[in-house]
Image 1: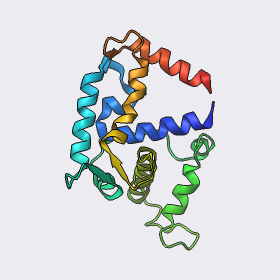
Image 2: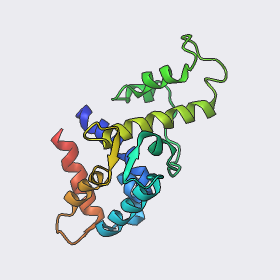
Image 3: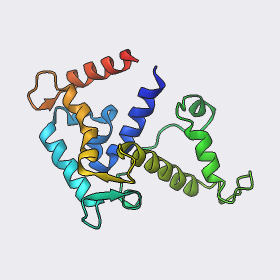
Image 4: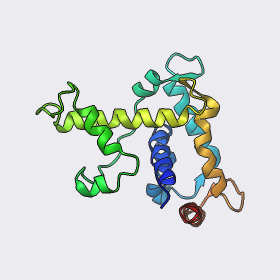
Amino acid sequence: MNKQIIISLGVLAAACLVAGPAAARPHDLGARLPISLEKMQARSNAAFESADSDGDRLITAEEFDAAELPRRPRHRPMGKAWRDRDPGGMHDELLDALDSDGDGYLSREEASPKHRRATRESLMKQRAFSQLDADDSGTVTQIEFSRRLEWLKTLDANEDGEVTRDELRSGMRDRFSAG
């Protein structure tokens, strides 16, 4: 598979967490299908308003980092198999970030599950923010924030305003086969 697609989808999923679980993860939409594009846009707008804590219509990296994200279910542990599937180098970046004192070793505190979870979440938020900030201005506008829902609109093959399970499967199949 094309590494860029995998990285983009991973970052998109992390970024979409701000808009709520149904918007965030196409792999776990399950019973939520069909998805109303209008409702998804409304959720996105509400999420933007929530993240924009000072109301200036821009989300800074600090506001994005402080935004409450829904908890995701645990996925695979960070063992060798996870490292082999890590297309964006997140594993090495995570190890560097975990070593907060920079001594090249992980202390008991640095390797603790709580510290690992917080560090990984912080890295995911940084990556998501960078992807959302299309113009590298250091802030995310409402337009930049809403662009991540454009892929849902492209999946609506019959243009009825909803994405069904078949449309989602077909669109994801086309996206992966293109790479």
